[in-house]
Image (cartoon, rainbow, N blue to C red):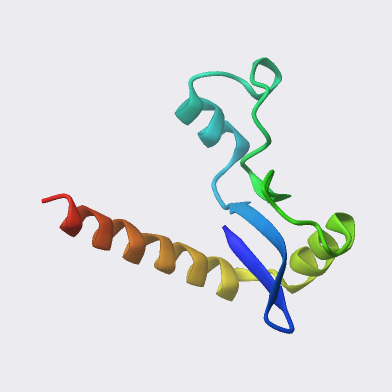
Length: 90
């Protein structure tokens, strides 16, 4: 979940799944066509997003800025959060 802020205000929430669509289908236990859940692969606007800015516009900007460096940062942050959560549940 990526929170997009402007002037200190939350204007959009983006979900980003870096794994393949097949990975998420297997993880969910069903194909995308059988599942009413939003797509998990790639960038999408979160259902709880305030959408103060254009959803299509913010996704276009996000995808234009996305590169291997950002993807690596997202993965690293995800791993750090998972590690911190596993320490809390011990």
